[in-house]
Image (cartoon, rainbow, N blue to C red; front, side):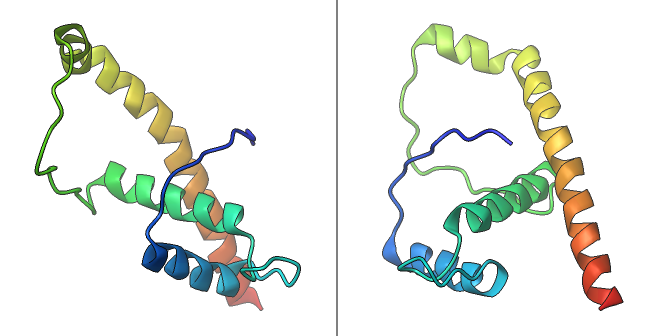
Amino acid sequence: MASTSLTFRCPDEVLEAIDNLGKERYPAANTKHGCDRSKTLIDIMRAGLAALSDGSVVLPSPAEVRQQPSDVRQELSDSSLEQRIVEIIKPLRAELKAELKAELLGESAA
């Protein structure tokens, strides 16, 4: 798996919810927040991408849209960009399904 760093601002209540989920799924006594945040966030992102990809979750439209240069708007309207997004998400969705299936089967066998 790639090890690219991702940095973003996160509201305290969202971070608390992430940590609570992480403590259940990936507890780690040697961290100040009590879990492996990276593994927790990767699971959350994969599940979110899968839900967005299969249409079970739809993001609301933003209230305000920033203007983009016309060349960027043209590129975004290109069907090749849509195809590329599908190519990126499809393997992630399959991988997530396989991981979740393995986890569920592992729990039912125990």
